[in-house]
Image 1 (cartoon, one colour):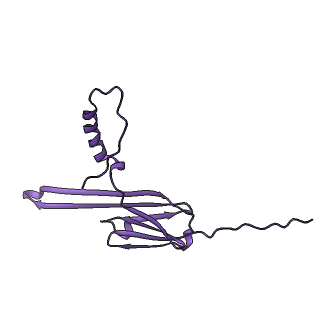
Image 2: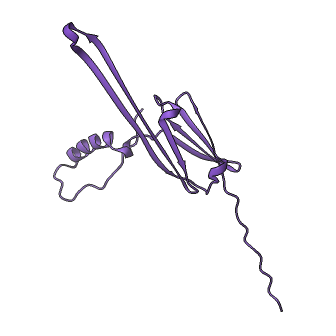
Image 3: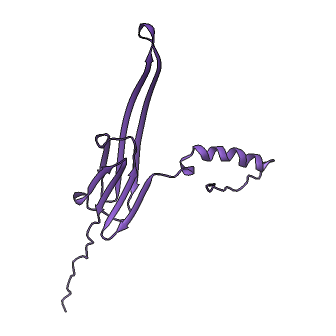
Length: 144
């Protein structure tokens, strides 16, 4: 299945726009705009729900900070794998992996951080964020 590519107006100075498009397609492979983010945000009832795919992370590796209008999710994990130690303690293969998770998400409504709930199940971080109650304001009576 093909994905959509971002279109940009061809340059007036370009002699070969087809060649420019070819090289621009490589840029889309490595830019964040060319990838799908593993985040889902939706409202249901009086709550805002956020789901973030975080495979390979443990709950202790993830930090969540809640604000009234946004959330910050950070995580870090490191692993090291050594295979086939040879003669005299020489290592023939060593693989170190370091991954980081860093999201700052604006929310569609103000939330109450005190009532939030989070769970981590099969590499998916799920947050239930209750919306902040709307203030109706104080009615001020005018005297005649």
